[in-house]
Image (tube, rainbow, N blue to C red; front, top):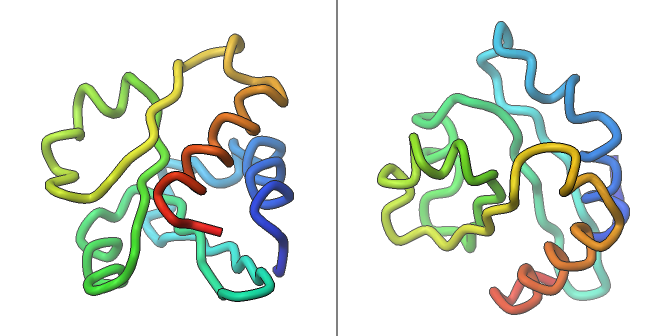
Length: 108
């Protein structure tokens, strides 16, 4: 599926439960085509697969504070964006903040 950055973030929020199926070990992918780049969003829990697929590429991890607490030390030098877990983050303002932080990391 091809989406721009903001559409992709909204899509992830709308379909979050489908992506976080703990029985599914395979990473899910969303393709993003912008004017100047093609990017992928990888969603899932297979850390080894994630590291292998992203080696040598520009990567930003989007996580929440709970997962950051448990897995943040695994991120190494990979930049990340952490959001507050729960209902308070499920709003368009959060999507705008995520998009701005992604732009700060050079993701367009």
